[in-house]
Image (cartoon, rainbow, N blue to C red; front, side, top):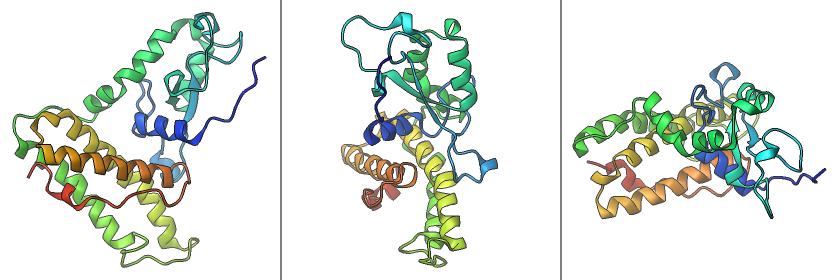
Length: 230
């Protein structure tokens, strides 16, 4: 039996980023930080497309030659129910099916959330401004550095509320803003492309800190993002 390795942080971070906080099975797409759990804990499970070794679901589709199972390309993020489903009924969920889920995930999620391509910049601006405003309102009240109600005791109610809002509201809003912007990237200026790249790095850092528990990596939110599509 092949020896299993610890999946590196970089791969786990990439999986959470690619999944945008939702199960990657297109018939599910449920949030991986469920509101009924307070939004503080995730239920995500890393599922292998092709298993370790010569046994397990879809082992007969293992490519010839050297093959590393613990790669971004061979993993997807699922809720527990969908993970069990694909492994208990592997014949119905082939390698090509699971890889198609991964490649089409953001488009499927965007469709579910009503994200689409618009005809002009003002339309794009109108649909992202509400998510931006909600994040800023939470930040002003609860953020560790600037929030008016934050207490520096990590066990305080304010600190717990901040963590909850980050995982359950702020990050989902960021993922939505990203999806809307990506769907309408053709309307962006050259300068906005650079600002958006900085914004993506800011969000990656937030995922590292608040999902993967790696402190101190997030760059500051680029203020120019407030004027995107304006």
